[in-house]
Image (tube, rainbow, N blue to C red):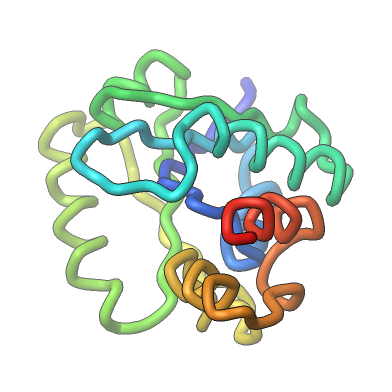
Amino acid sequence: MKRYALYPGTFDPITYGHIDLIRKGLNIVDTIIVAISENSNKNYLFDASERLIIVKTALYKDLKLSPSKVRVITFKSLTTSLCKKMKSKIILRGLRAVSDFEYEYQLAGMNKKLNSEIETMFLMSDIENQIISSNFVKEIIELGGNIKKFTTPSTVKALKKKYV
């Protein structure tokens, strides 16, 4: 039986930290479903359809990952509802620093209360990617800095388009 993990997030934009977690997750499960949130309470740089294109381009064209191993979708529901729909019993989440832990711990607990069959699996990216956040990447590009070390070439291009 195939094992799926749902990797939910905003991916605004996708970074090498996200990609590191996807690669590590693929060592544990057969397929990762990258689920791009369409939460209307957040203020995104890219809308959901733009983020979908950016993530697919980064993963499939820049990195040559297989669409059969990494699926990319958008969603507007509870993560646990999406897990049920996608037949995933695993939610993949990343931890960068101690400051992430409290929020992620509470979120995992709430998800467990919503659906006791779902487990949250925490992974850490490699040390060189732990400092990367989407917010830092956006700030650096907005201020004219070089972000090539933090995200894929196609994502850099999309960000430059937004800020130039």
